[in-house]
Amino acid sequence: MYDMTPKELYFANGGQTLYIYKDGFGDQYKATPAEEAEWRKELIEREWKRLDSETNAVSLKHLIDNLNYHNADDLVPKLVQKLDEVKPETRVVIAGCLWKITKYKKSFSIILNTFNVHRNNVLATVFATFQDMVGDREVASFLLDCLEGDDAVLHQKAHTTLVMWSYMGIPQLRDGGLTDALSPDNKIANTEAFLKAIKTAKRLLKIR
Image (cartoon, rainbow, N blue to C red; front, side, top):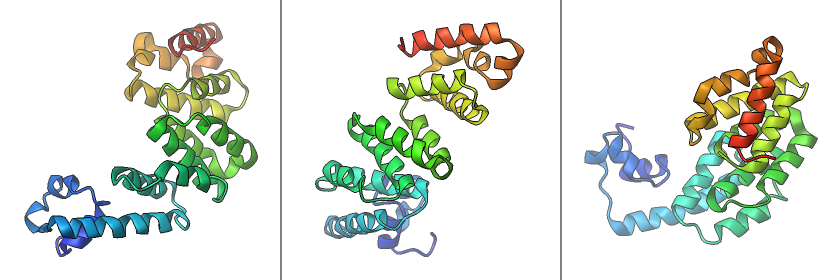
């Protein structure tokens, strides 16, 4: 970044200029409000185009975050429209972002339906998305179903997600070693304690 122009710095940080200063490049970032306004328009146009071509889930999430940060016109309706036009992994990312932006009610069902049809292609992205949907009851119910089920892969993914939730807004999940009790190993080693932990988690996450 040391030789980047102000415009390049702006684009490299998604137009979120705070990060330019936080990263120590404030001295070389010289831009007028008029320039930033023009760059914002270019950035929004770029991100919409990238949404149709980007294949990396993390990059997709970041570009949608950029669009939201810059209050792109008609962001939510345009993203909803995109759901029927994009590849499965992109659909999962968009649905997750819609949940973060507006608590979109259809996000979980869209993600689950996509997972059921394209499991091998979207498995990692689905659970990464669920990590961001902290406390959502439908997601929580699905995660606990995974813990109680016989699919070892889903159990591990769901357990990891709940551990992340315990550090992202629901610290009670760590009380009394609850996340440890919900682990795949404990399900085998101490079934009684595991089932008790499931009941505790359901009560905590308000799942009947």
